[in-house]
Length: 358
Image (cartoon, rainbow, N blue to C red; front, side, top):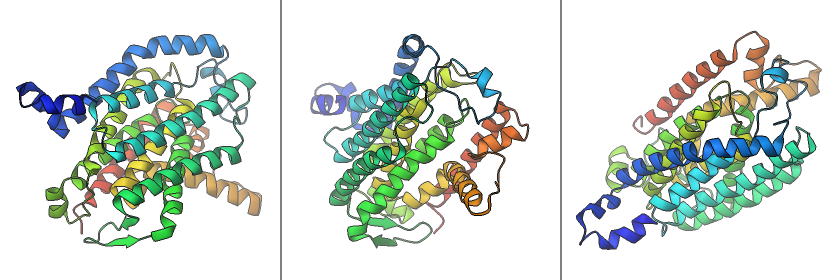
């Protein structure tokens, strides 16, 4: 909004020239989103405690320590993340850019689905929430619409990492591919969100990596130098990623162990959807599997556990997702969280290396 309002005035007021610079607006989006979360956080948490009373229902089949340590902690903290991301993006992004609206649409849509899921959990005291099939249908519709929009603007293509300018035209399959990327990422982040601070920092790391990728892919000079596909207009998503980083940092202030609030599906689904949509726009969907490798690992652990139990009657892990396996092995919660953060950072650096290794 500020970009669209102030840019025409830049020739008369020199300081307004700052809004022309993508790097300035990205930094401003980080600070704005973080401040929004820090300001509204305490009031929102108090309101959630009053409304939820017993807080988020804790799984009875999970680690027994959670029944005591996490009892009464409110959920739906993802509301502050959503507000931070959307308000900051609306303030600092170029609102004439269709990619910005596509990514905000996915984020908001997945946030609504997550909110309904959280609402049913706390009002019915049932950890299952919205039935899975209904969630999947709703997420799929949002993802397919976003993928069609992206395909019409930037083409239905997939870029292959480590290969110079190699892209694959997915044609009619692209909406299905977009569904897999966006819905898969949304639910992968959702599965990872099981311990205080566990999901939010890897999301911040991934958003930082994709903020850089968006900037480079959207700049024809850098894209040509790195021999990656140039996607006109995708650079504006650096502002969106900056808003994700800032909102994530602001939320982490309240989610650091011991958490004052959980993000719930409201936050995890929307953040995962946001990452998936940015990857789709920048044509770095395969790189997302590397940068978001921690989310992939958590998801695979669940798939392996379920498949093994159904086929053989035996469990591979003591409990899935993977972070609960280590809890059952006796690792403390902070140890698991920090070690997973380290893994997420290493994977992000490996993902960024694909930009040059060709």
